[in-house]
Length: 320
Ligand code: ACO
Image 1 (cartoon, rainbow, N blue to C red):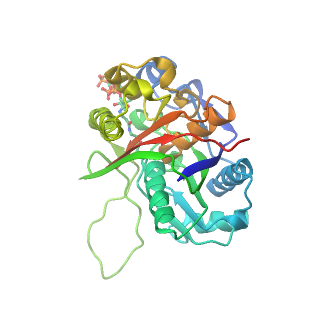
Image 2 (spheres, rainbow, N blue to C red):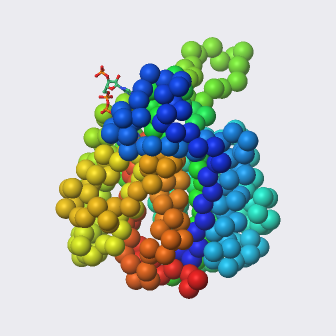
Image 3 (cartoon, protein in one colour):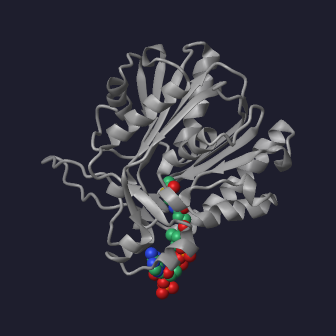
């Protein structure tokens, strides 16, 4: 596989830490020092579909490809207002494509898992061009009265166009069934024959547990993909890590003993946009011309499940 186009779209409403101080017992200082987040974008007037379609159109334009040239759409999403139909099929209509569509839910590791699926589809020869979209609205699953959780998240969408190529150098995925650390119970409809007590409620997170699991998983997996390829951390141009907490990113950086410049971040502007963090950051790096053909990039993500995904790709760009 290779990535030949990227795009991203964020809601227009900027919610600063000071705006959160108006509704919660917290401070800009606490949020900034504990998480790195200064502001986040929250969907209000727009819908998740609106920004997902916008991100997809930008990625197609960047790849110089028509939506009718797509052979597959993979959408990574945690929760949206439709349990069915899939978000990918809604986005398909929005961009005027006619190919098969598939949603995946691997929480925040969704982009890396979607790359892995794309590589497999391309290898089988099933398809030529794939659109990956990560579209997330975590602001609708958190309890905005819980200051430990709500301050972390933001909404956003990003997309990437994938085609045949030889840019994927290593991939490592894992899932370790761990529900208690991070979960969200969907509300089910009343059923007169099913009298079980069922829990519903906002996102539940054991922040300290996730923190430890995240640092341990990402450092282990990055070492693994480096070993698999015979590369060293010094050979990598950028480590594009899931933007969950700046302190997690910093712990990974220190473990690898690499300069800050190789760990780009935008969590200060957008918070944790779940599976969209890595492709949003990738799009920003690409559009600001920070990526050069031949650069080796590490993507490393973790999320509810507990799922992790880390890969090394060579950036060959799109000749734009
Ligand atoms: N403002 C002010 N004080 C707060 C806030 C807040 N927003 N939130 C918690 N506190 C208080 C706590 O009540 C506690 O007070 P106490 O000492 O009197 O009991 C104190 O601050 C310290 O709380 P901790 O929970 O120990 O804070 P910690 O340093 O662990 O930071 C955090 C919490 C930011 C959630 C951290 O644990 C974290 O980032 N964990 C990882 C989160 C994450 O990555 N989640 C994954 C997201 S989901 C996904 O990506 C799939």
